Each structure stands twice: as C-alpha cells, then as structure tokens.
Length: 354
Ligand code: ADP
Ligand code: DP6
Ligand code: CO
Image (cartoon, rainbow, N blue to C red; front, side, top):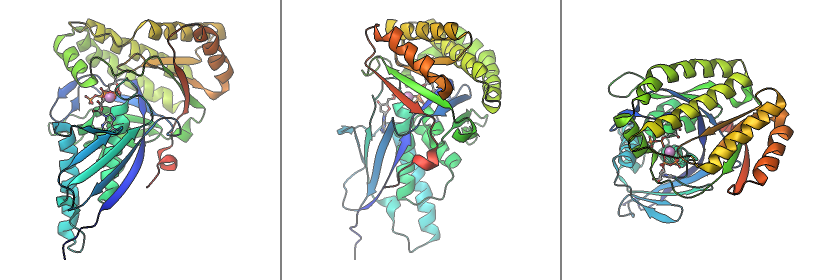
C-alpha cells in the first residue's frame, strides 16, 4: 500500500552576532567567503527561529512559509540546502531498504522568527540553521554540527555559525569545492559564563540593501576592502581567538568595535556607498564610549551587522554600569524602540526538539 503518512520534525535555532565580520564572497554559487569570521551565539530564550519540516507523498510540491507568508524557495541557495539534505537521506535509504523513502517526498517547511527579519539581527543565520537542522532531524541524519554547517553555509553564510552555541569560528577554507569552508567551536559558552549581549532595536524595518547584495557591491568596488581581507581580518581573527581563550574582555571589546568600524567603513567605501548605520546607531556608539570613559576601562563593546541595530557585549559583573548608563543616555535619545538582554547560548541545552 502507498505510504500517505506525514513525517514531521522541528527545531529552534539561535542568532549569532559576529565580532569579526564575514563580508564578501569569493564564490557566490557555493557561498564561499573572502575571509574567516568569529561570532557569539546568543541565548534562544530571547531571539530564535522556530522551524518545522514535514514531508509526505500527499504534498504537491516543496514549500516554505516564513512568518505566516509563503516564501519563494526557487532561489539557488534554498535549493542547494534541499538538494544536499535529500542526497544524504537518499544515501541512508540506499543502505537500508526498510527506511521510508522520505528523500523523494515534497517538503513543507514552516518557520517563524520571534525577532525582526532582514533588519541586521542575523535572521538569515538563525533561519537557515533552523531550516537545515529541522530537515536533518526529519531525515534522521547522523551528520555532526560541523558537517551540517557546510550545508547551512550554502543557505546563508552566517548560518553555518548558528549550528553551535558559545564562541564559533567560520574557517574560510581554501578548497575550490568549499568542502573545508565550515564552522567550528572556539569555546563553549561555559568557558566565559559572564558574557552578555544587549540588543538595541533602532528599527525593525527590512533593510534597503540585503547582506548578499551589499557584500557583492563592496567586493566589486571598494579599495579599502582589499586591506580589510588581507591584513585587518587576519589580525583581528588571531587577536579575537586569543582574547576569547584568555577571557580578556578589554581585548575582546576593542577588536569587536574595531572590526565593526572597519566593516562599516568598507560599506561607506563601496561605490555608490552603503549606509547601514544611522544617527540612532551612532548615538549608541557614543553611549558605549561614555560608559567606558566613566568606568576608566573598557566594559562595553558595540557591534553592528548590516543594519542600524546595535548589539552591546558586556560582562554580567558590569551590568549595573552598562545597563544603567543606557537608560540614562539613550532613554532620552529618541529612536530606540526596545532593548533585549541576552545571554550567550549553550546550544545543546536550549535546542527544543519537537
Ligand atoms: P539579516 O540581517 O536579518 O540576516 P539578510 O539580508 O542577511 O538579513 O537575510 C534576510 C533573508 O533571510 C530574508 O529575506 C529571508 O529570505 C531569509 N530568512 C530570514 N529568516 C528566515 C527563516 N526563518 N527561514 C528561512 N529563511 C529566512
Ligand atoms: C554583517 O550571512 O546574511 O552579518 O551569505 O549572503 O546570506 P549571505 O550573507 P549573511 O551576511 C552576514 C553579514 C554580517 C556579518 C556576519 O554575520 O559575519
Ligand atoms: Co543575514
């Protein structure tokens, strides 16, 4: 008898915010970066994507519903994820004839972000990590997070880092087929338990220039970008890994802020220029500077992805000084809609299997 069952699995995935930024592709088809990057995975208690994947012979075609709306899945990046995951399932089915033939059934993906989508808060990272993990759960794939990161990378580069909790590096690799361009763990969240992130939402609106298109314009037109990938990022990667291993917050903070500034300088050097930060973003930078000046040492670090929203890293021991100052300085600065506090996420403890 024909199998008309609906098979279903799900997952949540966290956001990660880079402290050494990925910006630039050397191969747009395989989504290979021009530089390595490092990020911090945030707790899913505050920001997360929730995705369920189902498949059945009764479905007519593959589909993705994102935040309640039908989403286009014809793009090469989503198709690459589906294709790779299906191939891995097909290999399991070929080795074990008693497994249901899920690899040949249409997929129905339903996803929801509980934070602004396409606003510079890494929705593509949590989104594609969740999509890949949900389908991997559905297909009962034995692949490691690092293996799955190879697939998530093809959906959105930053997504490869959201398959791990804690402090995560995406090694750019040098193979042409991209088989060594994947994420690995720099340190568990428990290595530095005091780390916190404050997310300041200046605007939840969809950005004018997507990350994908923005970075391609930068690679094509910015002279400063060459300096960034040849010298600045390699130095920042080494300094950042060192700062994390030694729990050196001052170094962590300085490299984060410098790297964010360098990335936004390359955006400004793109022709025509791209401006992700606005006056409200710049007010947050000044607020962090005054917090640090008042403390007489660096206790807060700002970083901005491709959008106006600010993430401030600080240690829990300095929470009164950091959060208090934000209420004082930014409370009177119009524009900030919300501040969301987040801890660094330990992925294994927070992933919900559905
Ligand atoms: P962000 O700064 O939020 O990562 P991007 O420009 O990198 O913005 O990517 C936004 C795009 O990522 C969305 O337009 C959508 O195509 C995709 N995306 C976001 N969330 C999800 C999700 N939960 N599932 C699948 N794709 C998603
Ligand atoms: C500024 O991963 O969103 O957030 O690979 O084209 O989907 P695509 O781009 P994406 O770019 C992220 C850029 C960034 C920095 C970072 O997360 O490292
Ligand atoms: Co993104």
